[in-house]
Image (tube, rainbow, N blue to C red; front, side, top):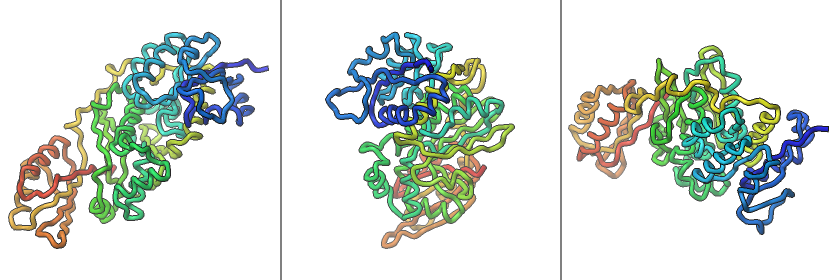
Length: 424
């Protein structure tokens, strides 16, 4: 007879219902793997009158779970950052294990929770890329490695939109509308398309890989809203594909962290990941490159990750939440944004008249930026042209200075647009 491990779930939405159903439908194999009977004792919801296709005791009071001495593990599945953090703190202070899927909360408060928890288990596999076990891979499977670099498609919504734009020649807003109609994008898709969601996930992964205690405002985050057909045409012309990537790179004693649209070799494994799928490439100094691919969202995929944490806690496995016994300050430093180095793509709309190219070349030269490839397209029915070019490796600071100077030229008709290029 297996003993019971009692669970309380705060937030019975799409993922919460998925957790309940999987624990019911796969009960035999889950119990066999956990070595205990994972029993959901109670759930907390906002509205008791709402119809739900689950059969567990429900309450509207969070305290009914946090203060219940018979509940061993609290699963937190709400969306609010501060409320989620308060729930997490009270859970750990009451000596209960915690499982959370809230990546935004962890992006801001993961180190505070680690300090409060001490040796109380915290599971958060579901916070990054749904059903892909990337957190366990970094904490356990790759723990013997220095992580040289990590590149990830961390947001399925943006990846779906870019796939539609590239494969079906859709503009951004058409692709976004289609993603919303199919349920891949929220009614308010801001956090997905502006890179914030991917930024939250990258910060969590960077803590595990490098011990970096950074907040979203500390790193470079850009979204996909300004990408157009010219950018896609340029990328295709030179053998690239555009992806919204979360990128982490270690160099000496510093780590650069950034999220932005990226031109990457279309033959790279990560460049072949399409639609709503997620994928993460990790390069370790001993194992080389490994790739993790799968569903990054959805009830079953995310619930599967939640239950994997429950099983791990049931087995009695407990390690420091973020995988480092030393504090981040004794390990690596975050590289300042302006010192990040990359190749860049520029898109400029300019007056089609003599002297314009000379002014552009002068600004690039002043900022130590040299051109690698170049395309010029005439804008029909207008005395204007589009200038598209890529650069050799330069710094973020030099590029930002050049952009500021371009904006002051009367011959520049629209705000210049840049995108970074990954060749490694």
